[in-house]
Image (cartoon, rainbow, N blue to C red; front, side, top):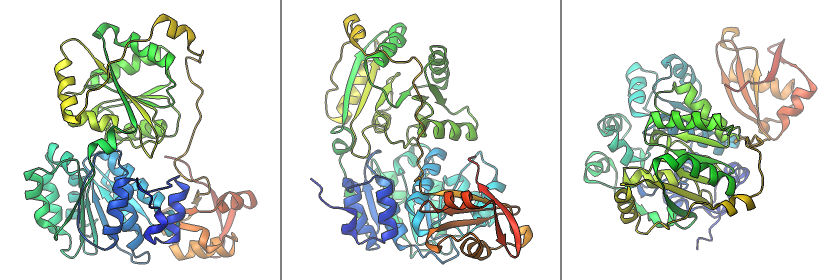
Amino acid sequence: MNKKTFEDFNLNPSIIKSVKLLGYNTPSPVQAEVIPIALEGKDIIAKAQTGSGKTAAFAIPILENLQLEENAVQALVLTPTRELAVQVAESFSTLGLYKRINAVSIYGKQPMTIQKTKLAQRVHVVVGTPGRTIDHINNGTLNLDHIRYLVIDEADEMLNMGFLDQVETIIKRVPKTRQTLMFSATLSEEIQQHIVTYMKSPQVIQITPKELTVEKINQRCYFVSDNDKYKLLQDLIVVESMEKCILFCRTKKNVIELASRMRASNYSVTEIHGDMLQQDRLKAMKSFKQGEYTFIVATDVASRGIDVTGVSHVINYDIPLELEAYVHRIGRTGRAGNFGEAITFVTPYEDKFLKSIEEFIGLQIPRANAPTEKDLEKAPKILEKPIITKTSTTPSQVLKLYINAGKKKKIRRGDILGALVNSGNIPSESIGVIEVFDNYSHAHILNGDGTKLLKAMKEINLKGKPVKIEKAREK
């Protein structure tokens, strides 16, 4: 049993504070293995499945060693999907909150101009998909000269999606003196050929799938006909306590049909699939993450981008045909030391796919019987549309402040810092990341001092003039 604590790594107190605010008590197996070696500056290959806590495993040592005052991008993280890029950047921002680290995500289907504006700020960490990262490199909006840390996240998925050539192109552009960290569920010959050859005597850390996907996840399957699937789902919703549930379908068509049917039954549900606009996908993900919906119906494209605490159930409404997809899907529950339920529906003629999955994970998935009428009668009565309890992934002590002045009024970061301290009476240690845009600015106020500021005043004195301030609106 792992008895280490995050304090054992001798981390900066600001990082320990963020870790505790996120509710992390003890490091996960991959964190306990990776963090001390990464802090020594060594290259690492970590073979770990989704749900292992690997994002914090590479983010914490990078954040520990970043130079706050250096006005250059020092860490580059490559991810296979847009959702994962957003999620990893948010993790860096949250873990680096009290160290005032600024992390941004760059990905396709979002205008380059929006990302160019973000990259023009003082940015420490960039998280991007390979294609969009190359676009910014070629356009001169992403400078790699000062990169000290390169992370290739989910290299096996990079291979599956045909991104390894682009990854290799980026690797050749970053300084050779960098530290390289690679995370992958598998380590194929092709991955070794494209990536490992660019690493310096990497240490291999292997966390077995059993540790990550079996011990804290109760797996079971139901044999059911296609026509009876929805009735079985409704019955399970009645007898199970589903606080947050992800339902996976194989196709976009199936996602749309199931989500529509559940809405007609008055369930609290949203959906995510490849035909949706990127902003709509992110909005759906955020709404589910914040507890505005109990259910989200998704295709596999989203399975690696859903990093949500408190997912009680994952239901494979359609059994996956790819073996690794099963592991990635069920890894959305049983996270951060919690237990979870993984349910798979198996229709006639799909038993061969079930057997392949069982061989892949090394155990037989228990067979379960559908709830009986007596089970349904004994189940506690619940509202058809659950009461929404909205939660936030941002610590409550943090307020993002909108300031009605920017670069066009010749406002600089130092001007805002001085105004908040002198005019707003905010302690300097409570002022986080400051971003200055053309017509407005944002400042993260920590330790609950932002709420106190807005209660006391609606303006601050900025360069001798009163400037309106308010809580920044969520996008």
